[in-house]
Length: 279
Image 1: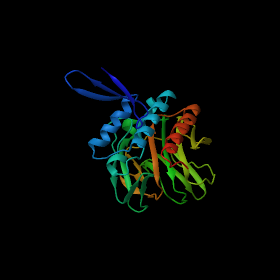
Image 2: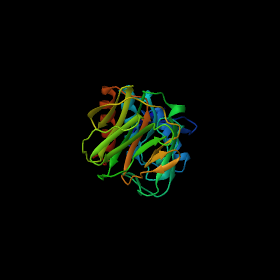
Image 3: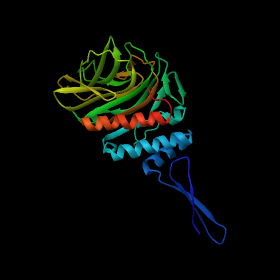
């Protein structure tokens, strides 16, 4: 006779089925299949997630699907699990598992690069995995620190000057770049919160700080041919401009509409709030 009891870990129900021979089996109801696949990848890699982290990740996936932005995502790094094994996993799929290099510190608040040698290679290469004028990248930062520090990016500056990267505050400017060279908003933001660089047309790139949009007139260039790094910029397979800001989330995917960017921020901020690491 089936018995249903509550499950506080994932906000769903635990179904326990029994029979007269004494056999039992259990499964959680209400956990999204993509979230569960992510949990399995973390475990297989040797990482662990707390019940709160699993609940936050599951809600994040459900929220992004409800907002119609899940399909636009190609790589999502929630930076949970307090270990390299867990933080390297891509929530969206088994592709683009990160590889950490240099000195990183992992905690329940995110992953912090040392600012001198640390970066994560995502394996995401634009001219293979993306489309010109249809891409976004994002990072959620928890350290207020200005300077020539790239939190996510790649470029071919020695070849054709194509760049896609985020400099959240360099010289008082927020630089969002997608498939272009130089573009800055001239707005001196604190480097706390969700920064998104987004391009959906050839003549402008958008820089979003949380839910605030900045539009820069800028013609697109070319897709880069090297892997996207987190914690530094990958300049023709050489890491440069290392960041020392704590990273609590990052994503790479297709370009987003204004509504989608707004919904994306709402979902990510709710995720961070559940984990008590929102800024």
